[in-house]
Structures are given as structure tokens and as C-alpha cells.
Amino acid sequence: DGGITQSPKYLFRKEGQNVTLSCEQNLNHDAMYWYRQDPGQGLRLIYYSQIVNDFQKGDIAEGYSVSREKKESFPLTVTSAQKNPTAFYLCASTIRGRNTEAFFGQGTRLTVV
Amino acid sequence: SQQGEEDPQALSIQEGENATMNCSYKTSINNLQWYRQNSGRGLVHLILIRSNEREKHSGRLRVTLDTSKKSSSLLITASRAADTASYFCATDGPGYALNFGKGTSLLVTP
View (cartoon, each protein chain N blue to C red):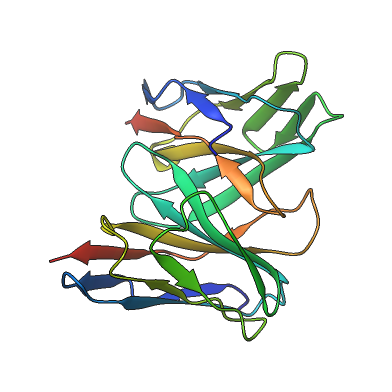
């Protein structure tokens, strides 16, 4: 079955640690995205990538980094510079172009302990 | 930049009733989409309406778009308990990304 897989589902991070969230898709989509969701704030765009080896900052990129070395993979690293990383992180993908629906993974819930 | 804003923030109805939620946005759009999110899960696409369309149906869903008022509405007819979820509207963002609103939380009680 085609889809997007995020792992792990739950992640705990100690203060000062970097952690990497995995996102893999087998939909052959060119574009991939990372969103952060906090209670009552909807989804906010962290980074997006329209093609392999290229990515752009979204609205809240500070404290995060990404890579796009393969079409099917778009990992997100939450660095120690992110002061409030506890949130629900969602990865999505689309084919290139407007008027297309986004497919989402099931999310990773990150908690700082 | 969260362009869309849903109203109401929360809605509670009984099974069989209709649920209407609204979305307002600020700038011109190519299309507007509605998504559903069950608690603790990813978003699922429901329907896309293009800027040159005024109304679209999909099963029990009816979406309208008024570009002159920069607003859209999502109507769920004959609601079921399984419709309990959060509903988000989404508009064009940077690249091919989407800008999401804060969502409407719908509770359908048996």
C-alpha cells in the first residue's frame, strides 16, 4: 500500500539533545513537508522540499534542520536550539503543482523530559 | 502564516443533525481544501474546491466557496458519531505547501 510512514510514533528527548524524526513515502511524490501542531494553534509549516537536494524554510524553521537526499525520505532534526520542542510533528507529501491533495503520515509526538 | 481561520472553534451536535463549519481567509487563492483529523492522528483529505467553483459535493459533504467574501463552508449532513474529529481548511502556501487554520473540533453524540 502506498503512503507515508513516520517513525517513531512517540519520542522523548532530554534537554540539550538533538533528535531526528523519520518520514518516508512510497507515493513517488516530489514534494514533502514538515508541520508542527500545538494544541489550539493548528498546523505550522517548518520546512518544505519540492525536489531532491532542495528545501526551503517555512514559518517556524528556527531550531530545526532537514535533508532531502532521496526522493522518498525527508528527515527532520530537532536541535537543542529549539527551545520548546514538545509538540506533534506531521510529515506530508504532494505531487508537484497546485490543486493537489496532501497525504499525511500518522505523526510523531515529541516530548522533552 | 496561517491564512485560514475556522469558525466555530468547537461544535457539539447530536447524531442525525447537520454540522456546518466556516473558514475565512485573507488573500486570493487557487483552491481551498478541507481536511479531517482524528485525535492523535494524521490529517486526511476530504475535498478540494477550485477558485472558479462555487459548490462541490462528496457523499455527505457539501463545500461552498465565496471568493468575494474570502470564505468557505463545510456542511456534513446526517452526522454520525464517527464524524467526531477536528476539521481544517487549507489554502495555498509557499511552494506547494498548504496554510492551515486552527480547526473546528466537532463532537457528535449518539
